[in-house]
Amino acid sequence: MPIKLLRQTIALLLLVPITVGIAAGADRVGIGDFSSGSLQDWETQAFKGRTQYRLVDQDGVKVLRADSAASASGLFRKQRIDLTQTPYLNWRWRIENRLDPLNEQSKPGDDYAARVYVVVDGGLAFWRKKALNYVWASTSPKGKIWPNAFAGAKVMMVALRASGDDTAVWYDEKRNIREDLRREFGEDIDHIDAVAIMTDTDNAGGRATAYYGDIFFSAK
Image (tube, rainbow, N blue to C red):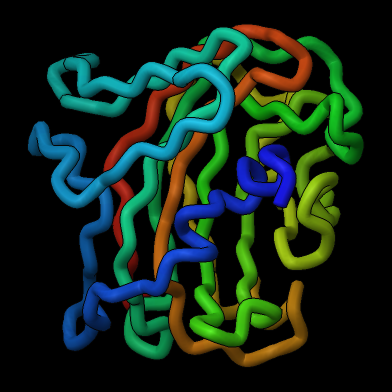
């Protein structure tokens, strides 16, 4: 499998069986507790160069900073989330600079200052593996959805933020993942198996700095 395809689908998440138990029975399930100064259970996958991720203090709160210079690597956490109990994914993020205008539907333009993935593992049925990729787009309009340039319709890109959104400003996000999966894949999928984040600039050779706040699932 080409390295580009591996990068875009976060290969380790999609190809390695998920072994973490289902998180259920709570109104809130933490995924990234960065404000506590912890990266517990987060793992790194590098593809081209290495985006630098580190916890930093900003306005008295610990957050995750990502610096990418013509590089592509991500952080991921394997955790099976019961979407019938906690369907909403919550996080906050900001970017410090926009990338140059890119054709994000093309392979040379498939770079993003910030992105958050959710992954559905298919187990041995590899054709059932899917991912939603919420991105901070550079040229695509907010709300646009398209198949990933490398992985096709198994990985759908959602322009959650775009060039009209301010840099150096925090934005709070909340997505009903179960509804988004149903809309994009035409299935009632009741769980996800992993979450990933990535700031990458390898295709066009740019630079980007982004910040990610706490990530969690909630009942409402």
